Amino acid sequence: MEAIKLEVLVVDFDKLGGEGVARTIEDARYPNRCIYPRVLNTQVADLGEWDDSHPLNQDMEAAAAEVKRLFPTAVDTIEHDPDTLRPCPFCGGEASLDMNTTSRRVYVECDGCSASLRHHPRESDGAMYRPFTSADEARAAWNRRAP
Ligand SMILES: [Zn+2]
Image (cartoon, rainbow, N blue to C red; front, side, top):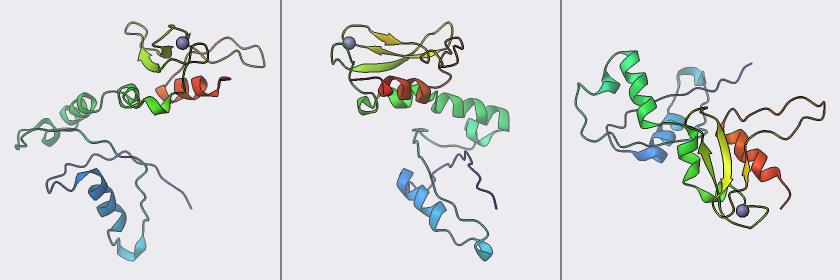
């Protein structure tokens, strides 16, 4: 037996909304109950007026580029949710995720005192500092620090 995590894009013609689409996928009757899907997370983007020439209706390459534009990076999603980052351990200020535009590396910085966390703490085996490879990693490391 295996579990499979997919990334699926759904165009919501009937305006069911994120919750509605998730429920439709989960509640559908699949032949012989061959699969049992659970939606793990949902993101919604406005497509404006739909027409058949929309990039999502074109070849895979055009569709993939449009998906990237609609759902940029995890950073953008998380950044707007301040609850996901604990307050700064130095000044108690609000922290936010940011990305270095040159190196494309994600880091966390305090909006109050500018304290920042730009890489994993030194490994116990003495390995060099590793930069974060995702917003999730950066956020988890920031939130693990002592209050
Ligand atoms: Zn601070």
